[in-house]
Amino acid sequence: MELAKIKACICEGAAEAAIMDVLLDNDLLIFQRKEMLEEGVIRCRDGKNFENRYLRKGFGNSISVIRILDSRRENFKISKAYESKVDVINIITAPEIEMLIILSEGKYNEFKKSGKKPSIFCKENLKMSSIKSYDFVREYFQHPARLVGAIKKYTEISKIRKGENTLLDLLKHSR
Figure (cartoon, one colour):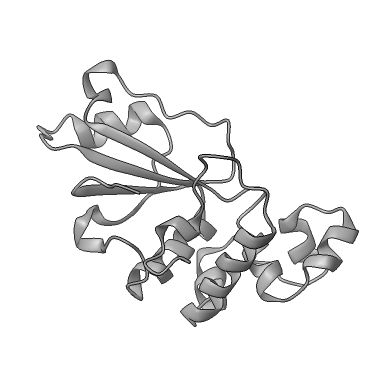
């Protein structure tokens, strides 16, 4: 994956932001905070808002916008004036980022049998009521090896579409 010198990492929710912060803080990604806009995760999902907030400030270089999201259908539209400067890379975490916790807990088969959404399974079956909270996810994955192991398991069991990127693609030692 080729990335521009400057990166913007946009996360869909608090759980995604916590996961990215764990990976960044432990130097596990193919980029570092110092290469990122605002040196951290951005919670600006709309392309036009991102453009107004970051690109219209005399921004001269190209930028890689790395979007961590579970939806394959969510578009990131920016005006034609910036299209040649912005490379949008979607990192898909479908069905939900909570799958990483299910895999880390070794509960994948139980989850599959339940027929529940991952977040509901975590709340009801694993008794994790704060599953979408930044602090909970950050604490849960305080040992980065646990997170990396879950990302690798996720990649093994997922049906990743051709040309689609996952969190594994962002890891330094991904395979």
